[in-house]
Image (cartoon, rainbow, N blue to C red; front, side, top):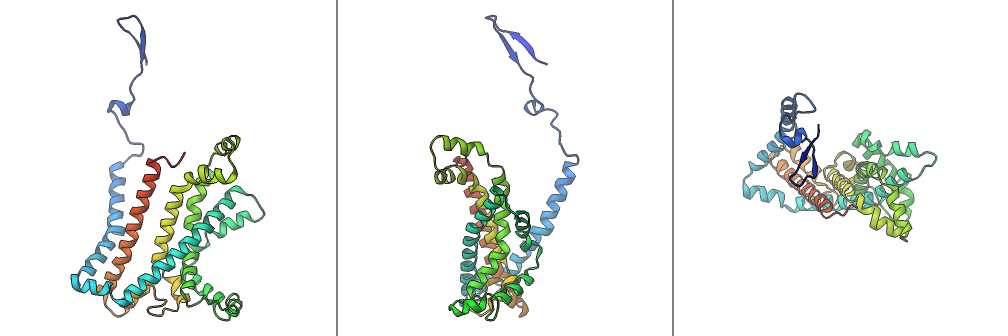
Length: 298
C-alpha cells in the first residue's frame, strides 16, 4: 500500500513500497531446487567439458617444452595449420555472405518452397559428415556431375584446398543462418519506415539501421561457423585427398599420430587448434560486448 507523507511545507509526497528485490529481503528463486540444479550443471560441465580438455592438455604436456615445440612447429604441422586456417577462412567468408543473404530471403520474402528451403538449411546438422564428404567427392570428382564440366574449364575441386573449403562451408552454413534468423524476425519495421520518412534510401537504411542491429548475432554465427570449420574431419577427409603439405588438415594429422600410437604428439597438435578456437571465441565475445557498450545497436 502507498502512504502519503506530509512534508513540512505541506506538500504531499507519495512513497511507493520497495519491491522484494529492492528491500533485499525475501528474495526467492523462480525455479525450486536452485542449489541442486546448479550442482548438476557444474558436474556436467566438469565431467563432459573440462575433464576431457584438461586430459588433452596433460597428455600433451608429457612431451616437455622442447619436444612440445618441436611437434607443433614441425614443417608438416605448420603446413596443416596453413591449409586448415586458409580453408576455414574461405569457407567462413563464403558462408557469411551467402548465409546472410539466405537468412534475409527466408525472413523477408514469401515464395513457393520457402518452408522446404528453410528445412534443407538444417540438413548438414542431421547428415553424418562422412556421408556429406562422400557425396561432395562423388559430385566434384573428375567424372562427377560438376567435376567433369569444371575440369574442361581447368578447374579442379576434389582433392584440392578448394574442395576442403567447400566441405567446411557445407557443414558450417546453418550456424550463420540459424543465428541470424531470430534477430531478423524481430526487427521492428517501424524503424525502417521512420528512416524512409526522413529521406534515407534502402542502402542507407540497411547499413545505418538494419546492419548494426544484426552485428552481434552475425559475429556469433561467424565465430561458431569458423570454429566448426577448424574441427571438421569427416566431410573433409574424403574430398581432400590428404596429401601432406598440400591438402592435409590439422585434425587429420592428429588422427595419423593417434594411429601411430603417438598420443602425446596428437594431443600437442590438438591443443594448438583448441587454443585457436578459444582465442577466437574470446575475441568474438569482446567484440560483441564492445558493440553493445558503444550502442552500435539502435
